[in-house]
Length: 440
Image (cartoon, rainbow, N blue to C red; front, side):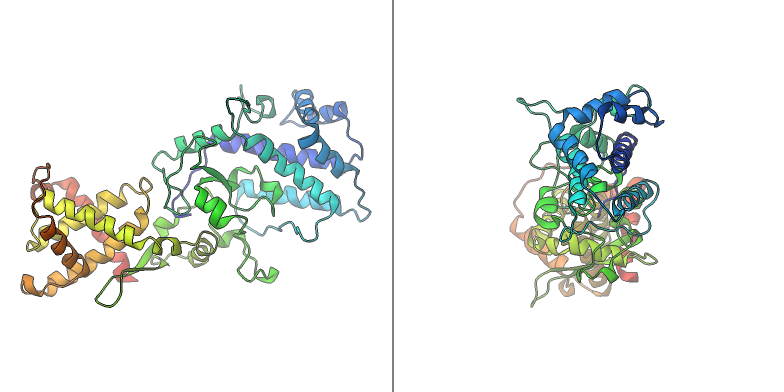
């Protein structure tokens, strides 16, 4: 993920209950070839997490005869002479519960090419909780509040569905309105919006026991979830060789670490007479060991390849923003120090402090940083304005001449603004960021 995401406490609590319930019901089905609602309720009441609510939960399972009861009953009925069924459920439980505590170790995917009938039934049961309960949004013709409150432990719980998941995520991540995976598209926090998907970072088709897992679900844009990532598995290498499967430590783990924004920078090749501007690759910052995670983002989300396809739009936005700022505050291209202050102020205020609010903020920030570094070097080595040469200065000079007659409403306060403590702090912050490129 480019952006850091934080897991809401409500989501963690509610979906942990769901995961425990699913695993508990699989163990119940493993031990009973014929399922009985009253017996199931009694056993649920013996579990501290569900005590006193067993009858309601069992009734909820039996009421959904096709989506919940049938696959669970099929899983119980299908014989398994080798006793692999119980071992399999134990493995699912260990993986699901371990992921609730930490993101380490390995996960074994479901082999859909060689799946047993009882594995298919269990997978349908696990995924059905997501498809038929959590995912479905309410509509004018159909009410679907999600999981009923009696599923959950704790004091006075309420229902929990897709809308609750997205609302809680937005409240916990108020400064993030861009897809955290690609930094490209805005998303809505309303379930059913055409801009929003709930992405299974580890695909539910391969890890059905993680279909409702709190550490496996994250809002994403449609491009990432439906057109780019699809069912790609971050734990699988491009060779699909089981011997080279990744561990959880080697991939970006949702909700447990900073985003790649904090740990990487973007390598940019600026345009010259022979070549246009190119976005090259993500690079780890100094003392940052995220090479494997960069490779995963590249493989499953096509980042930064997708940014390079939009480089003309990204570059034009950066230039237009600076052109407007220089014109509005009447900053001369001959005033080297004020010019650099203006550039760095824009880098800090428009991209660094407002990241996650507008599309392509990461790519724009590092493109501007590269442009400023080149312009700074040019200004430092030039003895007069005629000998200045950099992509940024040349482009701005051309644009300012073309739009010399435009009138801007802002007051020309930039020179004085840059002397204020808050502005100086922003400028110095931007200059420290630009040093990242120079060090690496």
